[in-house]
Image 1: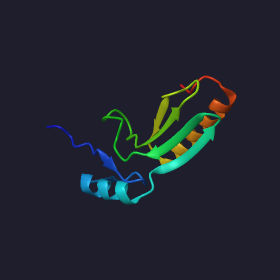
Image 2: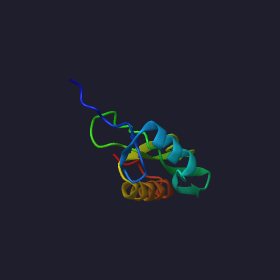
Image 3: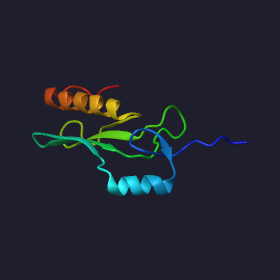
Image 4: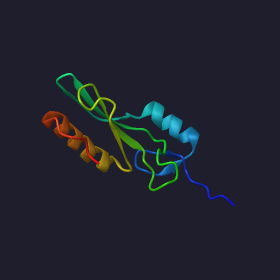
Length: 102
């Protein structure tokens, strides 16, 4: 018997149905943070869909870099607090033009 693993999560990390997620996603602000550094954009958003695919805690937030040295680099997080901290680290890395986090 296969165990049920939730796929959809509210911004606070609680599991929800696809219908509840869709309503939240439509109505709620998805953006957590956005910074432009020169021509490079660092964007962090709430996805609400678990991108861990059952291997570890749900990953429902994502930071992505657009442009510059780290174009298309991304990192995912389980909580909004982790996402905000990760966003700040990416902003500093882009500013310093250092290697992305591991």
